[in-house]
Image (cartoon, rainbow, N blue to C red; front, top):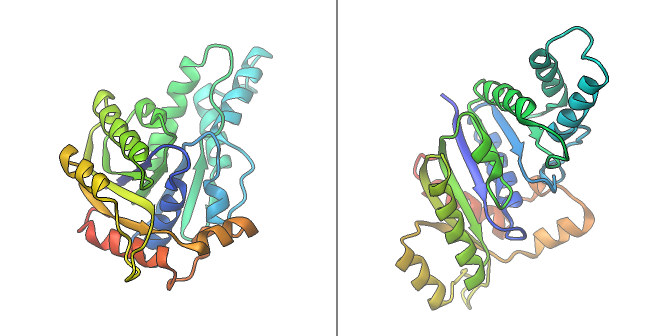
Length: 260
């Protein structure tokens, strides 16, 4: 059975990084086949995973509509055409495959195309052991999936009051959507370290997490290695095991106690 893990949070909190390092952990532990879905319109997941990206689902949707307006799809049904195009857009790499959702809809009627795309993508996902979704802030991809259950939702925040309030809004949003998240966990990223080198939250932030009943999976400390990799355009999936961030992610994943 496919296990779906969604990573969410406001822009700039490091959710794409967390998604990539989670995928890296699954690969290294031979956890099974992995489909990575980049559902953020900014489309950055392929960069941190170190793979090329030539086509997105958004591109396919636009081109399908244009072909339909021009008079047809070469004698095949729209459903079959979309399925072929989605499989062609799938980036196959060592240890995982990647599908990028891409740009949002433009003007025009997308209802039928979107329904078929959802069906094709959900059917594709069922052939993998894991689906890891790097979501946009609004969780639009989750709200539009035909299969909406999520086994684990990881909400990423920075160590600020505004960041945690945004994380709480994600929890409220997932409850408003027709989506069931079996488990929800909070990860706080870029946490300053104390004199002993341990990431430590401000007491006010700890109090808010406790007050709102958020389950904290762990803290990720500030790590200059991430900034160095980003500056040079190096994929974060290649961060060495001994870096602070890789060590923290390992502890977080192990603390999830079988949820990953």
